[in-house]
Length: 154
Image (cartoon, rainbow, N blue to C red; front, top):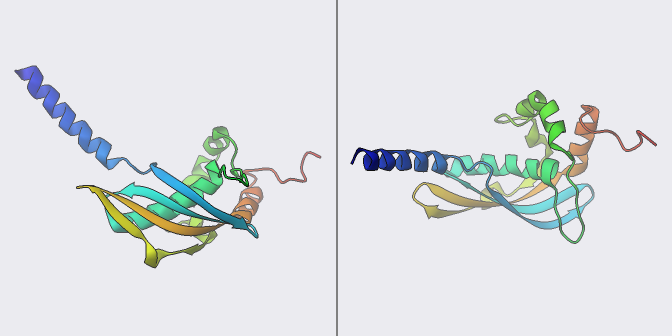
């Protein structure tokens, strides 16, 4: 009986932890890329609508920096490897803090047109169409010497 009670308590506790940790769950739909800008729709999961908007913007910049897009016109990520991220962890922690520098690289986000749908009681799925200034973000990473300029090494 004690084992069953213990298993029940552990399962309830782990479900609460799992329900709270969806900051890295996101999906993207690439729309277009022109003049150094990337347009796409991003979806993510969160608990509250206000938190959704902030997380959507942060995840959108992270997609351009670390993941890129594999569509007809392949758009590569700016940061190619995990080691670069780890070597510059303090910079990226500061870059992605609340109301951080990452907001400077968002040209347009339809904040008024955010769509939120309830998945279940404490989980919502939100969607936002956004435009990221990819070339400006690349120049920032080059000026911080996080990535090499294209004219280096030739």
